[in-house]
Image (cartoon, rainbow, N blue to C red; front, side, top):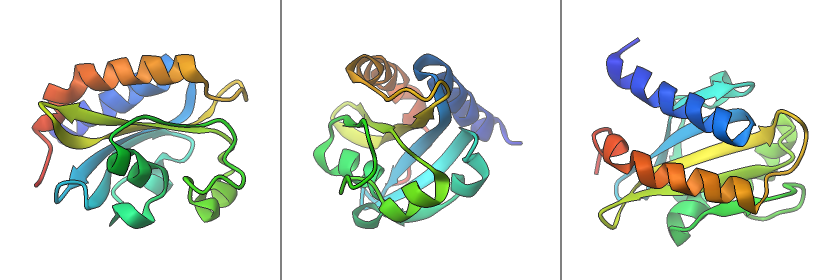
Length: 147
């Protein structure tokens, strides 16, 4: 594993810990947020998610976070248009959270958490914790961005 991938994996692991997530993902913004790249993931769905790319418009939760440049908290994914229902159903995602990573007014990516290990829903406190961490890791994530 490259050192770069290890740094992103470590960020994902920390996301998983601080919000008690079943799966945590580090998503990079490509072409100024036009595309999402799922650069690192840990947890239950990591293998199905990592190294995938999509347009922001078709990526669901991360695309919404990219577009609005604000955190997106989805307490219950079922029927929520901000979440790709096909992915949510296939992976059993019941609750999700995505927070954009912005540094010096530049969208770099997002930190995403899927399901809580204890089965509870993500809430405003988890959003606050994750948003604080996203602000903290901005300078680190900057080195991985392709624009």
